Image (tube, rainbow, N blue to C red; front, side, top):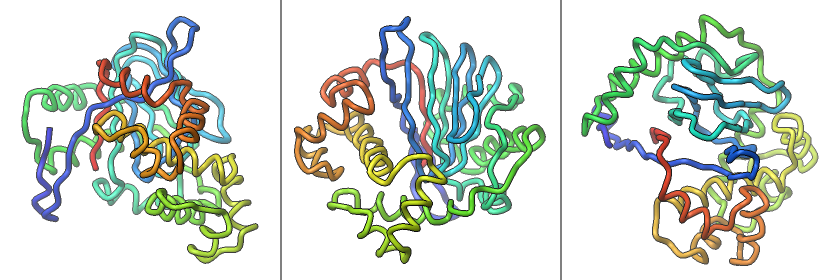
Length: 275
């Protein structure tokens, strides 16, 4: 499904996919710690999903509730089998007024109640219409963000978030290269020690783990949406070799790249990505 951004002459696309790790405990599904440049809304129509952001306690999203994750906010999900949900990733620029006003703040919690009367019609449209206007998409997003703002108190982000944001952008743009802590720090204008401490403070992880998460997140997309070979994906995402890619991918997802690709073709839940 696609819509045209007429005011900026840019093309945006809805992609339907799911990232999941399957365990033996009643087929629970898990999306490990990850983060991205986009904002994210996870809406649960039926079922139960647990969300946790770094530094905060777990929260539970149940029927009719949603969670808002801000750009560069590390988080992870765990959901029950059979849960019906929608995940919306979207560029912060699409809801520019909201994120510009709150560019240094983040929610003290993530979960809030959604106005179903405004949400359900949009969910119906994305399955029925071949094209959606950007204004409809913005109207939908701002309606949800208004629900969030009326229910959740905001607080200032960690002072180091701007540092990690610059690092993530640089690492994402150069992920096929052999990146090091020293090299990334020099590229964005900070010392090695300052960058290392900023990543640990803001994300609760070290540089190597952050880099691996960014590369694996890109690998998931390539595995589920392209026919590129495993070796090509290993090179494109900076793992260097197929063997290293297999080891790192399995460590994070619990699946081999081959199994992940096969399972990604048989998912029913819709993740709606606005790029």
